[in-house]
Length: 223
Image (tube, rainbow, N blue to C red; front, top):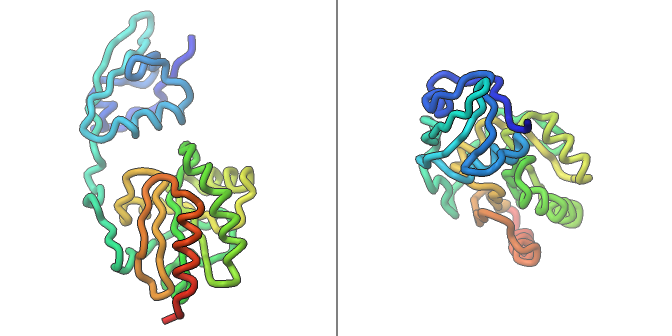
């Protein structure tokens, strides 16, 4: 029957402590069929750290109920890491998946920058990306740069970008979400020409509101 087969259990992970073993097949997660790997991952992320997560696995001919205690990664950044008015953290090592802009905020000083944190499994992220792509093209000459950042592999970022015909730079960065204390996707961070955070939006933003913000910041003089 259908289900998700466990190929790997990381030592000391919540899965390991819950008693999952390689070869188990997850048949129920929180009482429903787990669906695709993406759907299951989304469900686990949605439950959040500290939650009890109920699983039923098929182990040989037996069905075994298990409970996993979800946890935040030990090195997770403190909550509420970004403040309007401060300079954003450095982005660190990024691998460009597509696009030609530098993924380095110090090289983008003097431009208005939208940092869009996204993932392939996040539906609202994929809905916002074509909107951001139109804005990137429309305002590029006036000084707007859009950077899309994901912690997924470059190949995943590139395939989503090509499928959605994205016209801005997409990059893979394993640590950016942690250094920016991003806990929900999409999260957008808008940086002004002087290199300061001016807006942080969690979830999708109405394109009109975002356009107003960008036009206001583009009208400010360069430092």
